[in-house]
Length: 484
Image 1 (cartoon, rainbow, N blue to C red):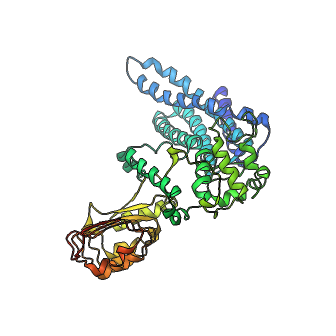
Image 2: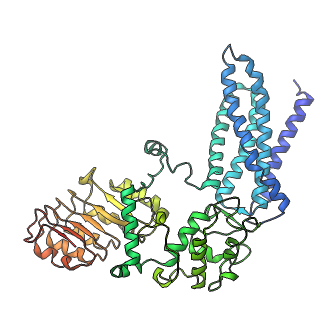
Image 3: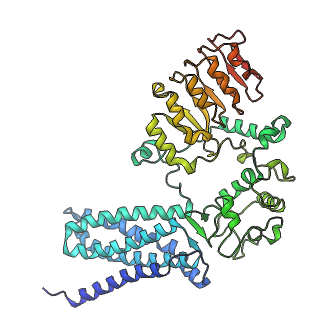
């Protein structure tokens, strides 16, 4: 039976729409270049229009399911009307989205994933329109796949706007486990946060802590947190406007596609400083799109850093006149490198070694805790040797009742950022414990119910960093708990 001319015209129009929707982004993908202001104006209707196909595509399966009942069977005609409308809305949303990304200076893998997800969604919507008339079983399968594709594409769009952890940040642990998402670093309790604030204040104010404070640079302690809070959403690896990334020092100094944004020693000649100090209604003002602007103290911190040479090695104590850290943002000097770039390695080690590597807090530079309490028999000297790829990230080792002995302590002594170690009820001796004296940052050591004697802890007693030493049930003749 020949295809009616009207249906044939609709088919041709649909095919043309698909070809255009794919060809234009292939020919002119988002490349980080700013273009016509009018194109940007039109493209900015994308966030408004994009919700229409989402709502319609969610409505279609509801109508189809309802139409399967005798009472609501008349809704079948409504579904037949809504599905093509959803396809048209998806095409319009994709067109505006491409125009916004292409003209507004966006680029990055997250932007591309969202764009191609939207294109695939528009194509899938068109396919659903035709399958509904020709094969209901294929239509049902295609509609389900389209809704799933829409969910994924919407998630990519949410990550562009709100950050990559927007949907998973508060996801319950059972759901995380089901989806294979790594556990979220736990949030500090009020008491823990108060303790961290107190430590931060002491580090800044106490002369005896000068050596510890010197480990932090002004960029990592003061500048980078501002960029992460106010700028990273639009300038990171997965999404960056005008080719500018601010997620690390090297990319910041590299600048944008228009050139450097930092002029060491001169805030007034630095494009970054110029943009954050413009009037909020200026088209070049940053952060753009109504995002929270930098406070006067944050601007001052950036200015002082630029004036001091815009280095990532200048110590935090070397820059004078910086505003105090807001109370809500105060926390201790970073204890370890950021663990997030090695999250896959961490997960692989947990799986292969049978132990847990848990973030110490929600701050990714507070390090990891080796946790063995659920299965201490799985941890031995070979386990500690297997942790070498993340040794610099570990700040706390909970090794009580494990099979670790003196050989394992030789490995543990090389964990340069280790602060706390619990070796209670293990087979360690004085010979092995002596090796831990090389840990420059050790603060707490629990040797309860071990074979350690005075010779094993003699050197440890004189370490300035060690605050607590627990010797209950050992062969030591002095106080079983030593606190400084």
